[in-house]
Length: 291
Image (tube, rainbow, N blue to C red; front, side, top):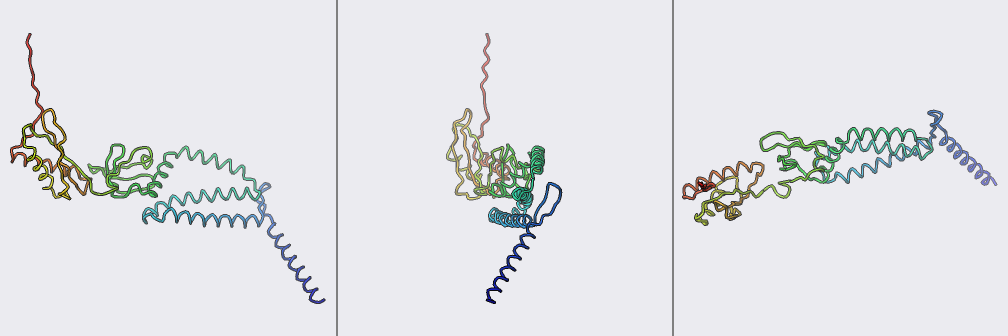
């Protein structure tokens, strides 16, 4: 009997505890006549924000696991702004789910975001393009790229712009959205070595085998030319005034290809003079008809 009475008393105490807990959880905090939040709602909001934080951290870790340290730092800056936007949206959705009327807040936020988006459309395009560049590793520092007819060596990749040095040693600032709007040629993505060529014409009647030998010698005499065994000559055409040849060679620094080509041309001219191979110039016969 005594045990039964104790059991009843304990159950009464437990039920009293849960009733008090429910009262505390249902206690409302009134911010205004239209906005009232209970303690239970606050706990739900904190739990949702905590879960969102864990998901965002996991997402960030997956996205940046293959990025270099410098690119991770740049990406984290953009992700920081994105994270706060997600927090704001999750907060508004959670408040609406627990019964708080946030219609006015949604309407004001939508109008504000649309206005900001229209005003900063190009800026957002640049930043989004910068994120794509960092994630898919399309362009790296040191790459030689050609875009919109301009060639440059990439010196720095930022979130909004890419800075490159042109062939005439000028700074080329490329807005990142141009990568989405134009075709990008990356000269060195597959291999830093590139195949270059110099074209020259010789007079009809020249010894073509001697010409081939001299062209290969002229290219391989340059210290910038690597893999000399791959240097080749292409007999490309029978021109109007000359036999056209291309000497094709490999260099390691394609950014300075124009300088190497110039040195090859100097050497071709010297060797041709020494071996009596003439480089013709266009000739035209003028016939005067008198009536």
